[in-house]
Image: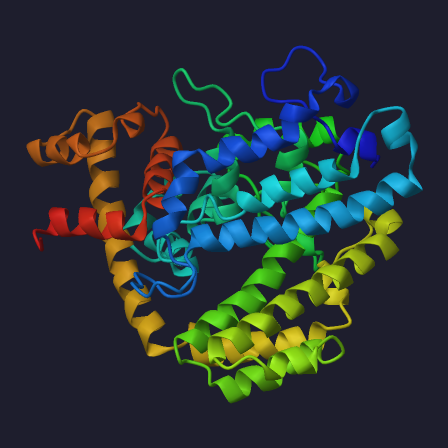
Length: 446
């Protein structure tokens, strides 16, 4: 892979080439990506989607929105630090093509901003709830009518693949979705493969999948334009990662490791003594002890250590990337950057404690259970109504249900797979609160 191709400014539907040296630096294409994402309805809905605590009304607990903004800030720093060294190492990128170090930061910031845009309500349990509706629930009856890969899309419903649909999906009058640059889409694509074969290797890019069968053709167009390295044979589609996808992943890993931990502390799920012990192990070489002693509140002490920890992990992720740049460009780096961090043991300790004290807390489990019930009910009701309409068997109840669908989701889908995926997509875009409201209205509980 080569950087000048990987930094493509092309957008879906372009007929002419976009050259970096012809860009207006006051309105750079990669920064337009950021703007389009942040003004989108799908991004706005993240303000009421779970990060750790579902349906939490506690003001200091992160939502998907605040998490995404923080990941974007960390991603921008990672991109700029890497970009500075890449431009120094490959000066032709600036001298011939006009690229700047901030371009790397803009791409990673935009992709990081969108990294959770396809996640359904109620956190990762929302993905599991959709998948299990089909694998062991009422949706199992559709299996025989779908191809293996279409079926896998549904039983392993994946927020990353759904995010690609959000960013690129067509609907009448809106061609190409948000029309994001291919460079940003490449950085967004952490898992550039289809749903089958499932986890064919231990390569980090094979851990999950990144596009639905409905989006396969355009995904391949983006990969070809960027010059991604194909790593699957026959009819299976898969590629090595865009190098900047490693930085997007690192930004997310850094933020959820440290900031979910901070949420647990603020909620009282993790004691301050535990927190200080774990965080100090991570940043002990960088603490200004005189400053630290002046901090009187728990919140200030934790905030100070959190900032130090994030900065420490950013610098280390940059080091790992730059040391392995050649292998990454050759598609021969099958790890997350944090897997090779010198702080991996400390990060693993924090994650393990978070699992015990936060992710498995009674509050989280109780609300995830409610999320399962809500999502399964919505899927069952809307899939039945949508299919009955398509098959000419629509009842008055179906008609009433379809009337409460947002107008943009009333479009016709000819295939069963298209209809099932369409309803999953609609439910995935609901906020936690809106999903609850639909559920209460449909079941008569409100």
